[in-house]
Length: 204
Ligand code: PCA
Image (cartoon, rainbow, N blue to C red; front, side):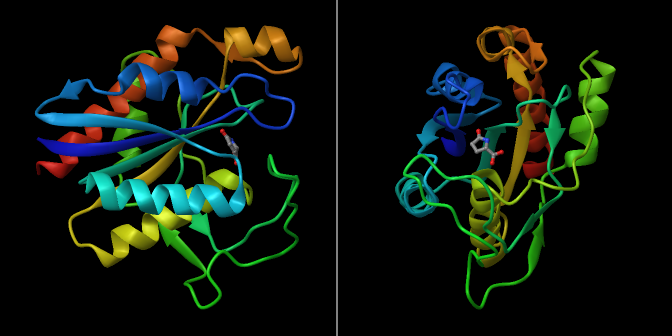
């Protein structure tokens, strides 16, 4: 069966739960319209996560690479438009804090996703879920993984790749205390709708 690599991240900074990890674990091994979802959780570590992603891609040979990340404080599901060749920001889980670094020394400045992000947002809104396209995935781990996924997609014709940031779950919002949250079932349904739109694009 054709495969989808669906990645999430482990907890990081003061987010003691990462709902993307829970989504990936729930959807792992399920199938959708003839595509098998292979879920993997990545480390919040600049060096390791890129290597993990590359290793999973080699192992799984996915037709679609969809990576998920938590954007604590956002209140909509936000498919990302662009990944930039920058690493900067808060320390990762191993304490590494890049300042104005490049992801790839001689890489492109940025890559645009080839996921159907406009249709994802339209579909989510139609089904009653707040969503909008985001024009920045930041400069932390999520941007880093989106960039790496897109490097692969640019080198391999026919591969769809991209990234979606999601809000906190209720559980995390309660535990954290200062960010909005969504019901976990709604987050899960939202990601399934995005996957459906992506599969439709892949079959086009
Ligand atoms: N969100 C972070 C990294 C891991 C995650 O889930 C980000 O937005 O970069």
